[in-house]
Image (cartoon, rainbow, N blue to C red):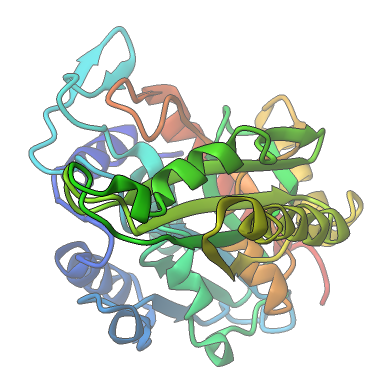
Length: 377
């Protein structure tokens, strides 16, 4: 039986800790202590150093109970960081819902996942529930492009299946397919000149960017492919013809070939614009993560499905439009499905979560571990 009072108290405690991307040290130290108290051997990798942050990913190993050593190793994961603004969060509880007061995010993304995992571990320990080997991974720097898990020391992983508690929807929702994403940096170099004295001697890079953006690929390309212009930076002063402009794009697709195609379309579109604008244009592509698809009859999905069925949760398999740590875990060879924990309107100040989803997410995580213990490796 999930301890609802404890789950609620821990969730409220965790969202009260500011945990900006690259500044997860305070919550990382707290979680390290709690994982150790629950019997885990905790390893912190060097991802923080590589990313310029102050905390690495936490990978905790929990041994199997006696007689369960041959069961599959299950990995439960969530991320520690939040989007901004995540300081001085003042939650409001009303009619079974926890929301922010409108001045910050709430932090259910992904403190809901962290809380669920900790409660599952406590239930296993307190009730002496038989289970196979467990790994718990709490990552850093998820919110700025899933870079924490990208830099995770994958040699620490040895799980047979993984479950990332980090998506919208009530417990019972599972994402089995997700896109890969590329970052595309377009740099346009024009020519500076005095804007009031001799503007005709300049070549305005911002104007060139505007002309090229009019018919550049943008938005939804097809059912599983999108691209987006997210940021434009250019010029130095209003009295100087802008000699530079930088455009920051992203491309996504659940199909690797389509991801490569739309990325190349964007690059080619701007490169071909050199001749018409008189500017020098370069493009740099930086892959964030690759797409993945888990077969719907894979052990990870079957275990999560059976656990949800036993709890009476409606099951929904979905194809996601967003990335998560699961993209990298699947690349590392751990088949990982993403589980719904109830987060709603995340990444906004209107974020909220139903209290029932907090408790159900913990119950589902626990049931997954118990269901996996019924399977032979």
